Amino acid sequence: MFKSFIPEHLYKDWLLHFSGFLTWSIICFLSLNNLPVGAELFLKLTAFLSFYLSFAIIVSSKAADFPRRDKLILLCQVVVVLILIKFDKYDIAPILLVLIATQLPSRFSRRQAMYIMISITAAHFLLKFDGNMLNTLFHVIIYLMLQVFGFSAIESNLREVKAKEELSAINQELLATRFMLKESSQRKERLRISRDLHDVIGHQLTALALNLEVSRHKVPEEFKPLLGQNLAHAKTLLSDVREVVKEMRTEEQFDLVDKLSALIEQLPGCQLKVESAPKINALSLKQQLMFCLQEGVSNAIRHGKANTFTLSAIKTEQQLSLYLLDNGSVKSANVLSSMESDKEDNQLVNQPDNQLVNQPDNQRDKQSGSGLAGMQERLADFNGLVELIQTSTGCTLKIQVEDSYD
Image (cartoon, rainbow, N blue to C red; front, side, top):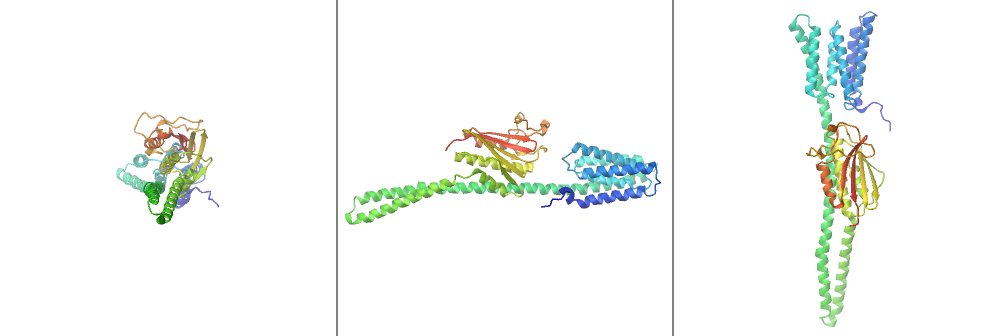
């Protein structure tokens, strides 16, 4: 399928970006139209082109890609516009301040953006002050309000986009939770029915067969054939019940990869790649691992916005190591906030094979936490060890357990 070379966020907001380009074009034309060919025309044209190129760089990149670079570019834009305002004969260059304001919501908080716009307005006032305090004040306040309007419009749009992303993540988590509850309830119901068949009906049929056997030796000869037939039917029914119980318990031997694939297939836009399937002997271990992997998928989707998962396994004798890799974001400080512990002395995950990303300590996820602790408790009977590892492409949930037959 053909894929557009235009980034998705640009394609969605093309009208906004086009209007910004059109605004810049009109201001540039009006400012340069009556200027004679010379140094002033060349310098102003250079300033306008520099502004638009920096504007294009900002709007064509995501806020999380190059935060420091983008802030420096925005500072350069402010300086360029203030210079244009200083030498503006038609008093139209301040409109470019509105374009600057539209770039602030994705890079700064509301408070920071207000400080920036107020500082720009103060500089604008000093540049345009001609001795008439009131006129100059009204002049700069009008442009300040336009900046606030442009900032508010873009901020509102970004909030809507963020809300949709959060809603999508919550919806995916609900689908995963529903799958987990469905599987758990079905498993419990099968176990309950099999136990009832074995403990109630099975015991009653056994008692009935014994009574028929005893009765056959005490009744007259004419009734013994009938009791023999009833005894055979009772034994056949008991055998059938035991066979049903055996089949129901055999169904508990599910395939871990198939169950995990079925879960991820229900999540919109998510996919699972299996590099090596784990071979697990113990049914109880397989069930607990399924719960742990489901929780790992749920947290990766919700907090890291992951949509691609890779499962691999390494087994040596009874030692089993599972790796669930995802492509979730590792730049956000709250990627796995639900797994963060209240303890202040938690140690960071040990770096395997030099794959950890070099990041500040305050941006790294901690090894211990409520989510990881819950997994650890589930796998305690199997000497389980759970770790969360940040890699250059996402996060890896590493699970080490000892496997043995039930």
